[in-house]
Image (cartoon, rainbow, N blue to C red):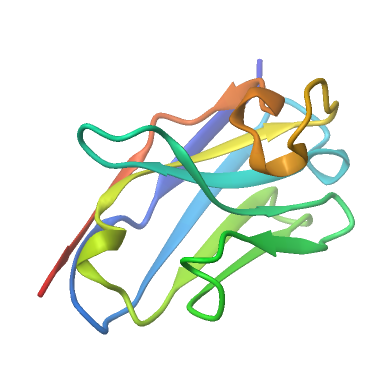
Amino acid sequence: QVQLVESGGGSAQAGGSLRLSCAASGYTFSSYYMGWFRQAPGKEREVVAAIYSHSRAIYTDSVQGRFTISRDNSKNTLYLQMNSLKPEDTAMYYCAADHLLVVSGGLFNPRNYKYWGQGTQVTVSS
């Protein structure tokens, strides 16, 4: 079955960097689009970045220029390089995958993702 396992979360100072990884298995990785989402306590889950199967990437405005999403199809792994971290980046980060858009909003809509990881916590202190 499909499995997504995130790693790389932890604590960082404001201005620091972290790199998240998402190891995927159980499906044809290269054929699926993928995304990183985050959820802070008391807030809704929001998209951070997403990447098409052909590696075109899109970002939410708040992380544009600071975060980079990438994928290595040879390793079945999705990455999120996070630089210039801010305290407001503190959240649980989830990777997600699917191959069929079913609702509007494209890759930014979490309802277009069937498969989700368990999440990895990122905490940024000022």
